[in-house]
Each structure stands twice: as C-alpha cells, then as structure tokens.
Amino acid sequence: MDRIIERIKGNEKIVILGIGNRLKGDDAVGSIIAEKLKEKIKNKNILVIDAENIPENYIEVIKKNKPSLILIIDSVDFNSTPGDFRIFKIDEIKDTTISTHNLSLSLLKILFEDTEIYIMGIQPEKIKIGEEISFNVLKAIDKIISFFDENMQNL
Image 1 (tube, rainbow, N blue to C red):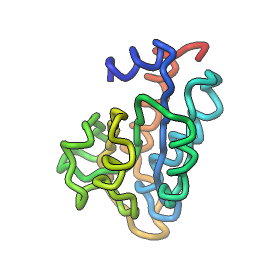
Image 2 (image 1 turned 60 degrees about the vertical axis):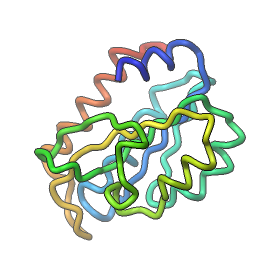
Image 3 (image 1 turned 180 degrees about the vertical axis):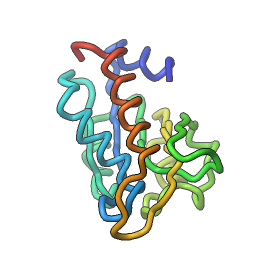
Image 4 (image 1 turned 120 degrees about the vertical axis):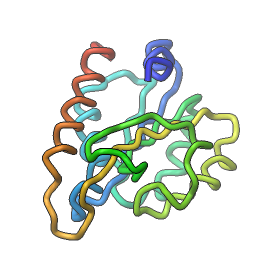
C-alpha cells in the first residue's frame, strides 16, 4: 500500500475504481469505499469512480484519464477472515476469483498494458441478495478510509 500512496503523492494520474453490488451484503464494499473517497479526495490527478456492479462501463473514462496506476477496490475471496484486506498485483489473482462482477482481469491487462494495476481485495463474509454488510467488513471500510485520511490529507 505504501507504494501506491507514494505514487499518489507523486502527482501521477491515478484511478481508484470501486466495484460492488449494494444489494448483496459484503459485495458492496468497493462501491461504498469509492463513494466515501470521492467525497474526500479533491486532487485533480486522482479520479475516483464508484462503478457499482458495472465496471466495464467505465473503461473509456479510465482510458481518457490515461492513468499510470489503477487501484481496483472490491470484495475478493482469498480464503481469509472476513474483513481482512490485502493489495494484490493484477497478476496475482485469477479471473475466476475476483468478485461477482463481469470485469475481466485479462481484458484489463490488455487494455491497460502500460498501466500498473492493483486490486485491494476485502474478504467478504456474506454476499447473498438482501443481506446487510457484515460487522467485520464495516470495520474494514472504516480502517481503509482512515488509512487514506491519514496518508492523503489535502489530496
């Protein structure tokens, strides 16, 4: 995460892409974090997108922004404790393990071959339709927003 913060502070063009389905419990996590970051980050070099469950609709917007780094925030089952979060390089995750959305990681690698892509994966507990976000994932949201607040003041 420190490398990403350094890049952001270095005034590079960055896209933070939050993905999540707000009707499916913990699956909403990326969307909620993006919504909160959008309110806080005012740096013109940082584009925060709350893509909800249709990230493929934002490919052209991201391309026009020409970022050097893309940070995708989403629920990812990496066999950990609910609410744990981790940063993955795009090559560390197989297409079949990221979220419940239609965004193909292999397609992203092709479309943005000159761009570093990271995924902040938050381990979900429950992702069924109609469920509330679990307590542990709510705590993770607070931790992640606090981390950005502490490290990116005035951005």
